[in-house]
Length: 169
Image (cartoon, one colour):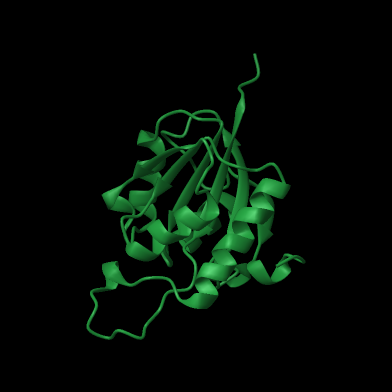
């Protein structure tokens, strides 16, 4: 019997605002450009019928604001996961393994962790790595049903989209 597949959407938070130098990193909000790009990505996700069933989001202000602009009215179950704040690859793998089962899961998080997870799932050699997961960019993967022991190369990359690749505003 063939196992069912699940989808993973990796979304880096939109561009943050650095105007208030005294803010803690976790408290930095989105910039005006970040707000526009998050809304643009949300429109694109709806147009592509790619809205997630479950969203796991970093507690960082910029990630939370990205979530609200991407999916303010979507029916997805939204869970803030403290471990996603500046998470490294091993933490991201654990979060995925512990995530409630859903057919399409989105993680809204940070670099460099999302880039490491992208390369791990895509089995991209270091010399061929994208080396850049721009803000508000999204990687869409197909993965096996069980996410408890994902191995390198288990992901099939469907698409990688940046806000500047989206034709509408």
